[in-house]
Image 1 (spheres, rainbow, N blue to C red):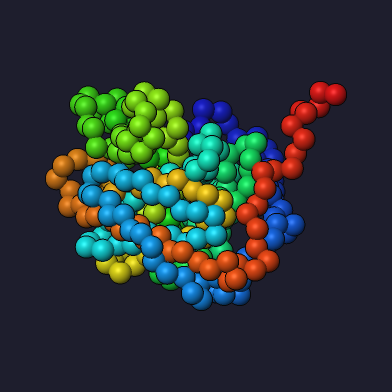
Image 2 (image 1 turned 90 degrees about the vertical axis):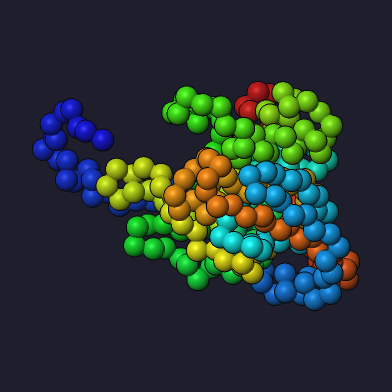
Length: 285
């Protein structure tokens, strides 16, 4: 960013004002690792969905069950959308998740839904890449800052139609799942959680960057479904996002989604979170 105006005399003083974390989250229930470990005591895999490279698939997870996204053949990132399975107008809200959790999420973080529901949709309960932390470039894994590769931006920048961007993959998958048209499905596609993707902002220009994901076959991230979920996952055409964003030359691999059933007695004391309690009057009596 180039400055066009001279610095004021108190520029240094203004820059050195201490930052404040915008949302104090102390009143939110803390992550209860003991409960989630107990909930997994007797869990049993009941279904799996293999997501083909450069494509997307849907899956459903009842409230109180777990699901995992797993690397199975090669280093590959995925773009995740989540909806309330009973009302898809309520969907994953990456912006609020970013504000309440962080730019990159891992074990103990919650994925939040859009307003007016604004409640946890899923809680991350295991992450084999949690060792990565932050690298020297400021990069981390599993971001909620990117959107998703899409054919509109690709056309604007490159002047070609490319139909296997994550946005299009997710659109096709949702349309097939709900038996609706592409035009009806597309408005429900939303900003994603970039699973396994390693991203950050450059230290000099603060531009969004990606680098080769550290994910390897056998790595997984695990979620607990706080509400009934409909999910869609795209195996990104960028592969591990270490070289390209959307093309047919980058090596790409499938991703596996596994669904795990739990026993009611292992969920004692838990209940699915209700929609947000705000009265929605917006100041009008």
